[in-house]
Image (cartoon, rainbow, N blue to C red; front, side, top):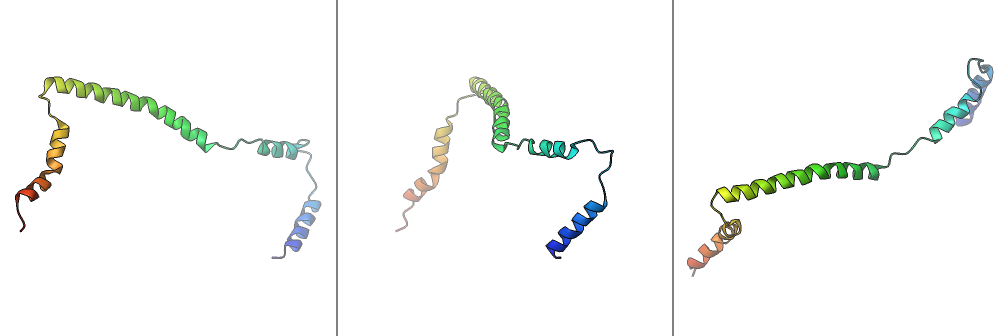
Length: 102
């Protein structure tokens, strides 16, 4: 569609329909002023606020698990997790050294 023809038709339709007395004075200016004064949502601020709200439960969970671990170690025999991990990871290497391929 031709843009100039569309513009001409819209202007003709607007001129044929006079404004009503029911519309308050300067209503369109107030609407435009309200639209331009709308605040843009700051996504970084929303993200930072969500992270700060999540920090408190994370600290609480960390404290609870720390207390649970310390109390559980007092009741049960102490197992050295690092030694168990080393034995598991290096088991294949130790086994390969004992069996000669040649």
